[in-house]
Length: 325
Image 1: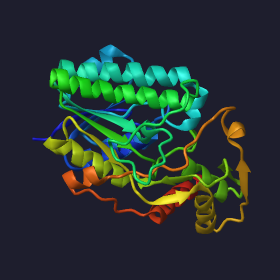
Image 2: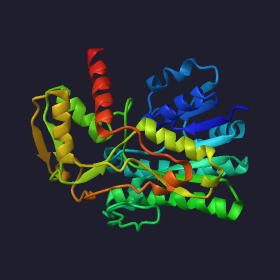
Image 3: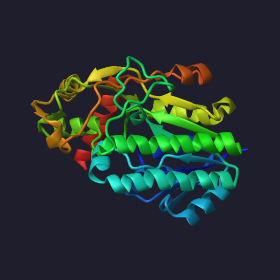
Image 4: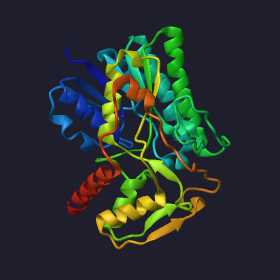
């Protein structure tokens, strides 16, 4: 029997890829999205599938969420305010979406006894720059007046809510902490670094590296991340647990900019931009963020199959196609 999924944020970058993967294996999907950051074009392939339905609406609309949770077997809660730029520019909207929205979705899942996966974030770890962050690593946060750490705190509360519903009310919950995810359909509009670098390089513009460029990140291809999500959805022993999902390959932002320039054969220069010019005064960043995915691998056998070069080739190819249209 096919399983029916409700995916909040289903027209978003990761949500649309998850939708495609579930439909490809014969499942049914209802995608809920208010299209504030998601795009209908992300669902072009899914839109022609007989097992797919799109509903335009907000996770803050309790009636819509209640109705759709009742219709589906499993809820995947991906809808959130995402991207550093959006979080810094619209902190109140981000908090409302991430706190109240998650509460509404989890409450609806509980009402109808649906398994729910709550997508969290590597931002949970804050400024912890350990060599490899396990799920039990300490959170190191700055002041709550800094929007980035307010966002981290909101996502932590989402996690705590999922854990509490599982512990006290036996709701089957799974929490995934997603690290930097990249691939086709990702927009550069909300501060995502690889789409921004690729667009700048192909346009012959300066690649804007924020801070001193020595800060490092790890990037996972969206197909690998979706594979990890599905493995966790399918595994009964994932219930009640939290898992890092991300690639461990580490690169500095300055080296990433150089790699993009080389792979696009661009003549673009690199421009160093102070954080207070890129975002706002008092903005704080972390020096490293490297995931330990041992827990996910041990349970499901998951391992990333795409390299950073694969990720960049896909991003460059998609951006070139967009520029030709």
